[in-house]
Length: 183
Image (cartoon, rainbow, N blue to C red; front, side, top):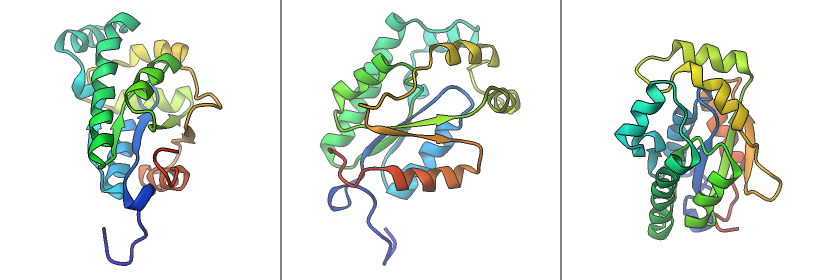
């Protein structure tokens, strides 16, 4: 941390565990990476935890069902739990579109904070159309939007619109993070 810089949110400078969630095209990975840098915390992309067969399935335009998705979510939850136990905190980009998916993550890391990134359909479709080298085709955007369950009032988290520069979104995220990662 730079001299004179304020301590990041969390107890005694301890970074929180943050799940940056949203549908494809919201910039989860970019914002999560920037937020992790600002918090001086480990970063991960939950896409890296998918099994090769599941990636092939999505690349073919077939959405994952809940039974296939569950082991992946448990792996993401373990990553969060390990960062929490180590005291390092961590930031992970993960779609976590349904409440029950977030419940799996919360079971592994009860203090996790969920940062839900949102945007309109046209912006998301435009972003996905410009993207190259990603396994998630634009044809799955509508299925993701159809199953998306916004954060509920009893979930620790905040919602941010992504209609501005990722750096500004990461700065806004710092403002909404709790000062005590567990509370």
